[in-house]
Length: 153
Image (tube, rainbow, N blue to C red; front, side, top):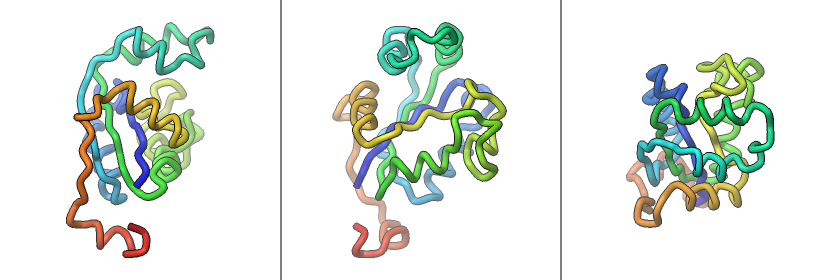
């Protein structure tokens, strides 16, 4: 099974949307393999958003991402990266389709509720950046036969 990385951003924490967002992932049938709350700092954000460091909005992004603690998660499932990207919706919440997390819960391009890895390769890098190996758990919920056909497992 593939893994992906998620950050529930400060806007999610501040607006008390944590339960709503996590519930959507779980109802889809995705497995939470790792989850924790942490306070991000400038060092880890500069590494995580290295492709945006030179952009004029980066100082605002830093301030936003350090406003409150965040919740970081590792989700596991079949084709989990594209599944989660579809669930999350467009980066700018105003352009995100209704029914997506950003489309239902956001109105901003920056305060866009959640970060989700954009490829399996980046997911592996991001997971290693935010989690120690012993913080990731490999287990199979009893509900798996109700989520996947036998030939999908």
